[in-house]
Image (tube, rainbow, N blue to C red; front, side, top):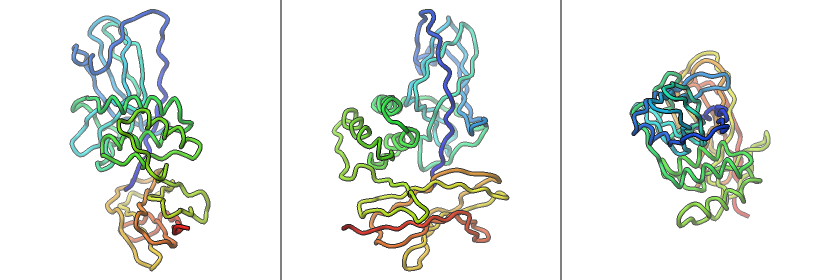
Length: 288
């Protein structure tokens, strides 16, 4: 599974100098507000921009975490991951940049210019509460936020939520307090991030390994993700990954459940000529 990080756009601070009415974005649509939503290029990457038109009096408009914007059928929905309260004057049209995550790990990412205007809904009130707490209580919530969204949209296990060791206790506390019938996984965090050039050394309890990839492509090409196994075998994990010219930063994630101990190599390769674009050694240790 190839996971792309999404850019996080800074949210403007609302002005609370005078009391005004407050309205949830979905309720506003029921009252005749109009909107458009598009993925745009920005200095920090891609930005999810919603344009709203207020047909009535001046109102504070709330974009609630967990709100999902549907786009084309083959494109991941865009899920708002952080509350934003913004004042919209009477009769005004205003653009708002929202922090967001992918609403499906199994659908294609949108490209700049992709429009998300096929409907808006709330995924889960429980998800909304947990997203709020992640931003308040985790020191580095960004990756955990995307993993959490996939728990609710794609039925991923809660053990797939990655945080660094310093945040693990807070993560378990939040999930225990917010998730109905929560059962803590036997291994608190099943994602491990390689920490040295030699590769990570995982215990047998580690389910998946994740490593950050930085690659600069001289031309657009179709790529594949390959796992080189200790016995010399090659396992094609993903193919047909279309990548454009230029610099790319993303995470490669590999499942290790059931694999024997040994030395593995995770590679990103060009499909046409088989050139290695990125390589990372991973050593999987057995128990004991």
